Amino acid sequence: MKRFWLVGTAVLLSSLLGWSFFGQESTVVGDSVDAVEESTSTPIEQSSELIADTTDEVIISGNQTKRPETAVDVLSTGIIDCSSRLYLNDRSRHDAVENIAVDSNLIIAQFAHVNTLEAQLSYTLGAKLQDIEHRFDSLLDFNQQFPDNPIALALLIESCASIKQPQRCDNVLIDQAIAIHQDNGQFWLSLAALYLKRQQQDLALAALVNVEQASYFEDYRIQVILNHLNALEAVEGLNTSTITFGALSHGIEKPRISRPIINFCANSATKDTSVTQLCLSVGQQLEQQSQSFEQRYAGQKLQMQYWQEIGDVEQELVVKSRQKVLRSDRRPKNEKRLEKAFVLALLNRNLLRGWLENIQGVGESEARQRLIVRAQQYSATHGEQACGVGNEIGLR
Image 1 (cartoon, one colour):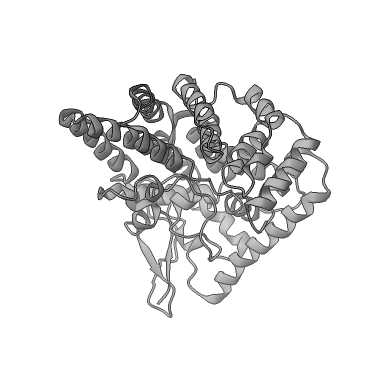
Image 2: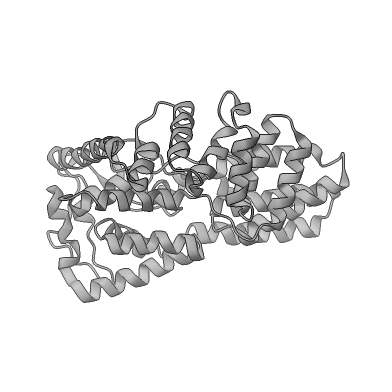
């Protein structure tokens, strides 16, 4: 019996979905909480797979699943229920959605021959490259053609910490990226991870000082999806479903840059008080400034390590209390409304774009609440017509 999970509750598509609409694990993932917290027993580390299990399910097997013919179900949520457009209750509908994935793959592959920044970046980041080494090479080529692009430079430095030869990120490339991202704490985290991999501890500590002093955190995952949206919208004749599903399904995987920082701070805790204090400050900065659930949790983990090291039980309890609040934010009580709002956003580019932009501006938790409000307003204005785009892909 095969299960199709519609939405989870963490950030982006992997956090919307237990697995993607295209029969494979989503590539749009954040630093999983598993990655930052492998040794603790707190429930939050279960990440999106467990969280997805809390949502409603539809069984794709024979006639076991029964959905109403009408899309209207607003009594309890104020949001039109468009799930029947997306649930895959028979093979023909499953094929329809798989065809969308194939179509968007082919379109993005053709962007190799379109000489615009958005199309070239969409191709560089959306093409089905085999591994991070190929992606790094493609990003280098893109940087030669379009120098000083903030997305490409940030992702190049991230990739440097994962490729087999991190020394390929030479000082020229690093200086180029610093000039663009000198106030971006997320960039300095990536650079610290790179230096740690190259065993350049002094440079890593200097990078962490810049994390501590950063004025904002931006990892560009949302920008990548918005870039795909823009590039696909520029293609004449594409329907909404191909554009939205294509953009979301071609998001990129985030390297787990928090893990080496946490491990370094844990190993350095008893050796140098100044390092210990710096790790605490970085953790506080991450929790307060990052818009990402995962990075906020990583910040709490860094703080917890510090208080445990010095034996301050009272401060440990304070951090544990904030972890509980973060778990609550990550698994909201209004999951049914959130599920419907996500589905409606997948069928409406304006809702989808607004939600993504709000994640950048106000963070994941507030962006979800705003999406719910906008979905309610859209449902009240458009009624059953709000779900009409589903007909474009052969779904009921």
